[in-house]
Image (cartoon, rainbow, N blue to C red):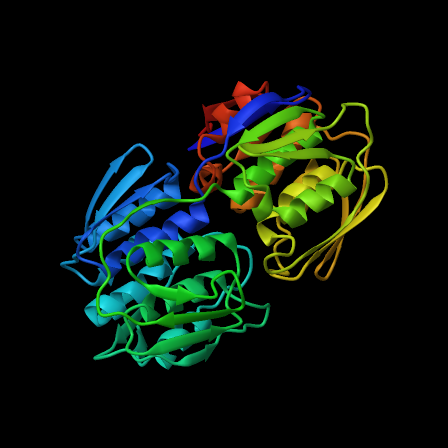
Amino acid sequence: MDRLVIEGGNTLKGTINISGAKNAALPIMAAALLTDETCVINNVPALRDTDTMIRILRAMEAKVERKKERVSITGACGKLKAPYNLVSTMRASICVLGPLVAKRKFAEVSFPGGCIIGPRPIDLHLKGLEKLGAEIKIKSGYIIAKAKKLKGANIYLGGHFGSSVLATANTMMAATLAEGTTVIENAACEPEIVDLANFLISMGARIEGHSTPTVMITGVKKLHATNYKIISDRVETGTYALAGAITGGDLFLKGAKGAHLLAVIDKLRECGIHITEHKDGLRVKRKVRSKIKPASVTTLPYPGFPTDMQAQIMALLCLSDGISIITEKIYPERFIHVSELGRMGAQIILEGPNAIIKGVKSLSGADVMASDLRASAALVLAGLVAKQKTRVHRIYHLDRGYEELDKKLKNVGARIWREKEER
């Protein structure tokens, strides 16, 4: 197993190419199961999670070929079971459930796994499919779904913490082949859902209202092949924007879409970071000696501040000139990284879903443990400015969601490298 070693103190300058969106790629790859024809998906990032999705599709005997960022999928499955050993490692694996039920009338999918950031039940996924007419049973850790025919329905997908991206994706995919019209209320509005809808439309699906809380899908009898390019990754964009901000750097994020990250850009500007939007990306700049202003951040469903950026902005606010408050309203238990930032000298107090951060003048390098994907990124950000060396352990989390993060940072001036863990 690898760990990352970072010697902090370098100002980052240069250009970083933003990869395709992981959270768009995974459901889109699953959606290719809705046709027997070959779908070509471009701009797929080279990640542990996309590799896992390819392995799941191949385990079901779909034909998958990958050449760099291009993935070709022929979704004619010989097996309709998504196995535990693969699904248990990644929550987005649940996205094969809707397409299998819609196209093959049967699915057997293990309960999903992924990062440990608090309870993330799949009740809304099951509710959406049951409303469409699927019979659902839980047996030996597997979800078994059957449907002679799916029929359109009015479906409310509100959960305890708001809308669900993956439940919206699963229900929308299944509804494309259902008889009649389906209306999803309280649908997720994230850019990744819009991208999935656009992919489905390019396959012949009839979808209206995507990007709004009310999505209407009129079922069709058959979907066909398509050639599609995935949007850029807004969370990767936000993470590198914070890398530039925290180091007092000057970065151009090529391919970034500012319209997908308005809440993050707004908060960074509130903190005193200069961000300019260009046709082909974003420029992020902060003078090394300028102070980072404190801020109050509340995570909310899109277009609010994304929970997937909470840990990263916390790293920045640890160095702010004052007291900041972060309120986590999506996953209230998503604060495992707080104790690790504390090992580096951060002053953070937790009170329920609130993190109260007292800015410090500097952080110190330390051995820290990554608990989940975005927490890993936060520790790397802290390491970029910490005095002495920081060693981030268990970085397999990072490889799930960031394409060559260490290489991209090294190319803009960071002192960062991988080494094997000592046994």
